[in-house]
Length: 334
Image 1 (cartoon, rainbow, N blue to C red):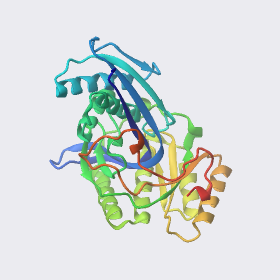
Image 2: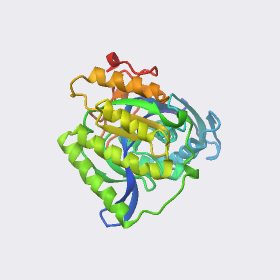
Image 3: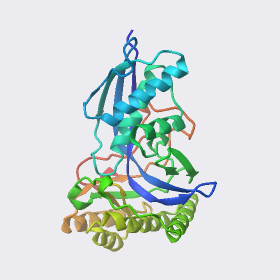
């Protein structure tokens, strides 16, 4: 029987918080907290070819070079764990995550690939190992291997700086795309070293986010996300940002969030707020009037499927979530 494996990984909807933080040793680390999103994701299938050279790896689509690197790294890891010689194989990727919008499409491909390779060996690699392989494959990665748990994650090191809590406060998110939805080339963004004042500001936001998660305070979480998004404009400079925050304020939202490495954004609402349907509809109309295309309205997942050291996901284990149709949002989908 030909050893085969399958793996899945979710996406996210940009960041709630991103900046430079201090780790337990007082060392500066770039870190982020992503906004979980159920629905789109990547699926990988890997057919292992024992006896072939380790570099004999093919992929469909052929341009998924990061996933191919991840497959090679995962093969080496799994071969060592099982005492088998590394070999080549065939990788096939499918998914429905928009590319270039800051929703973690490349990380999702990489994680699904690592899980598929591990599955072909009969293994379930722990999330910290998946994170290590993902960083080696693409230099920086999102914490999608943790499947929605709110963590402050050092994306360039593949490690958790802090578990913020068990789950984000429930939110209703009206998704949209800034800049007409054009992909953002993060390599072309200006790089500015964080000052001491910057680090202090990010640490204050970290403290407020910790409190928001502990008390399930959607409004406080929205304030943190908006402050982080505003600081992100120093590099991103979205011309629609002021309009976005104004729409959120007038529609009764608790704030906005953006992808710090992409164009996707969201207006955040407290699902317990009175007149939610009217607020969201008003928001969608205002976004349309300002020429900001809406994408989908969704509720954030409130539970996770695995802990920080639990097993990897396979086919049907993806977190459940609300209807997230690709058509512009309609309240009954909530």
